[in-house]
Image (cartoon, rainbow, N blue to C red; front, side):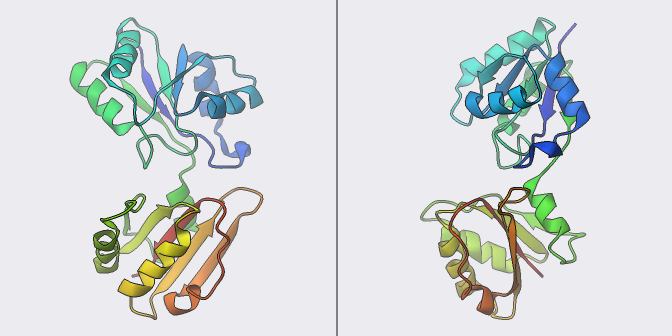
Length: 222
């Protein structure tokens, strides 16, 4: 009998946001595959979870995929987590899931849902978001102009992540492609001690000094 691959959401800042089901599952599996074992061990230690960890990240090669497949086919269940949030959503995981689905259709892949930064930000944006587009992280260099043009042309509210190093640049790029009265919502350090929000028209947001520390979710109203 095959084991189960659990895709487990973890807190994006506040450890109290983990679900009871996630804690129970992390205790039951034979191994937790994670982006950074140091980050995940801190989470596991906080909840007194003794399950061993192994690394799995965006640069993992096929040998790691095969290792996970072999464990599952031997009957042991494993968990996949990212450093924060949900694997496969702007985090490693989707390629592994597709690989397991193709390699053995009898292996169950079970989601253990929890916090997602994009949904958390949307919930407090005050924008109508029954329809929205999520565009992950903007590209690093040459494709940014095309990316932000696509953001401007979307028919629905659009959300994306941005790093602390590039948030000011992203705001400037939005100013170049959006009408000046377009409403924008920026969430910083969601669920953490210094959580903060900025909301207004893009022509005004560009003049606000947004601290370039932390992690950001940007939402464009349509």
